[in-house]
Image (cartoon, rainbow, N blue to C red; front, top):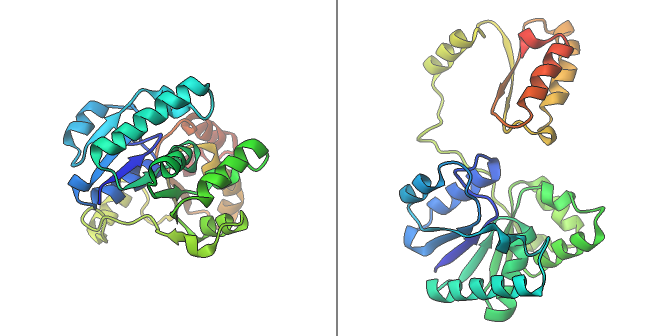
Length: 259
């Protein structure tokens, strides 16, 4: 069954959602997958050459039709989508986000009868609650999906609170590549030595450095933690636009030597 993934962002851009989608689709037969995205972050040309399945990098204006675009742009975008699906023999559409990707799939469902699946990651379910017009379209894109995939039971509960049937939502947790990640006591000990963590109690956060991830909350709490556990160290693994602010916060809190 040929699947088309429509997603606003995709590797080599770094991010949990991008990594989740890429790894999920690399475990499908390559000849049954195609990806459509406007994302040209990083060395995308090399990435596409090495990809097991075709990646179609289109101009971003098509993906912006929902936010800014008149009737002409919408018509041109949906005509392009319909032709692509017919040319590729697409039988099911997958959406990296509910908005705007899900609305593109919704139109394909109504015009070509193609079923679609929406992947949800939590933030998009919550962020539009104070924007009634956008929130209404989010719910509509989700309601007409053949299946909704949530990355956690928390996200699933939030979807059910929106009025979606629980049996429409399937939880698929982010997986682990056991060929790359597995217990290795020797490597762990070597890492502790290299980072000066021998004999330390380590708090670990792994993720992008963006405000909503909450690394700043741990840093703010660290002075109180250190009063009770002086050997504690906060190890942050990741990178992102919030790095400089977090570094300043650690100095301001007087815990830079423990972060």
